[in-house]
Length: 610
Ligand code: AGP
Image 1 (tube, rainbow, N blue to C red):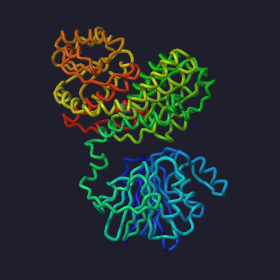
Image 2: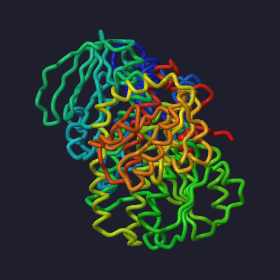
Image 3: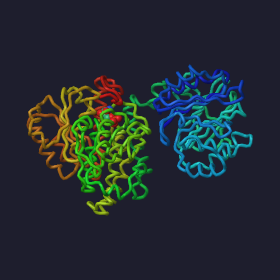
Image 4: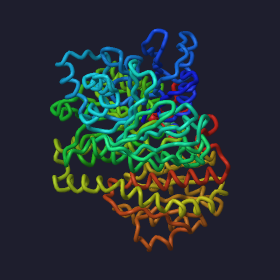
């Protein structure tokens, strides 16, 4: 997800573009850039940098841009090509006549790049975006709109584009399919933007471009047409949201927005990583023979990523028979670990900048282990230091409490287990196909759970007074219990402990009384009856139980004070499902207690120090 802004009008474009980028920083912030038409030089001048918008602002302060009435800008969340100055937008064509910004993914960019290189085009970046700029140049014969129209017909994938040309200092061309783009209608000025917050300071009048539409924009006029050239009547809407609300797309908090993004995060992963029933681990950078050759796997991670790794252990061991250990990176790094070249180190990290995880993998590499990382931040330190990198592409996760990154990490571990299960025949092909079939159903099941979120909110409200929570789970949902406890404690500050349910009688049962709430994760599985026994022991001691159970399980109601249902699925997939009610429970309790859900006290989104 990236942020685009464009301006054509009578004011100086640069400050408008920078302010707009600041409002879109939630969409991506690993690098950014601005390009404006400089009428004194009769050319387009660009400033771009790796880093946050404040770094770009500082750069422009030190290297000012001339006053200009036309410009485009972009803040990036890297997908193709590491975050650096060269890969940041805007991108030029060869002649530096065309300048372009893009949000989305061009699926056929490699073949187009090859064709353009054969025609003599010279590329400077690794991005798919730059290909579009050269494609427009290829079709440009003086009419910018026509050249863009011809170029986008060659593109496959998702794109929102802003394009300018030094031959047309009064024109802005925009186009979109699969990525959002709006037009802001001002007085003697007009804007394009990825999202409303970027232009709200200037106007509340917007045109929401639809998929397959493009526009020719000057300071006085906006003409919308289809990609085929058919004119589209201008429909101007009035924005009623506040900037803050729109950045959260109407959700009260980024965390809630990101919880709701989870169905699409999974959909995107399934679309790009499961071709039919073939698992595609692009970026793994390991030959099948190498993958088969590992005799053990060590997962290293911290916090939520560590819990995802624990789920992964059950999956990989169950589906391949390879022994997996999961280590808190902060412990692993000091333990003088026993690793060799037959050990695969699997690092899991949303940010790819967690100091303990980086130190752990460096230690393992020093001892000769191979390293594959599962990471969300493209081009992060961890990504750069890994032999293979599996990007989750979950998009920027703004809420400090990890949600969509967690399920994306687990999903990637499923994909790895499925890939490796083909080598080790620990499960039958029929079982493998059944898991894949159930896996593909998950996004819809997510939506079912989210439809019932108000039931979770009610239960949360009724239980937000408890001063202590215990989370219990077994087998593949023991990590779910740990994660549920972490979610609650980190955003509500309520002491919460996750435990293997079988361990309850070895100590935690002393905690149970009417003043404690116990969350029991008890979907249908071969340990379900054991969970019911735990619940009976808790009820006998007046503990209050919130059960997470499989839809249709009425029997569990007599053992619990509240039941939150999830749809039925393959037992191995249940950690992906129960994660949602656990996230929602923590969220609504924290909201009920008036906590700062997105930026909980004492926490940072990425722990880059020890
Ligand atoms: C989880 O909600 C926390 N934000 C924290 O535990 C986090 O998972 C941990 O710091 C690891 O971060 P990483 O995934 O970026 O390495």
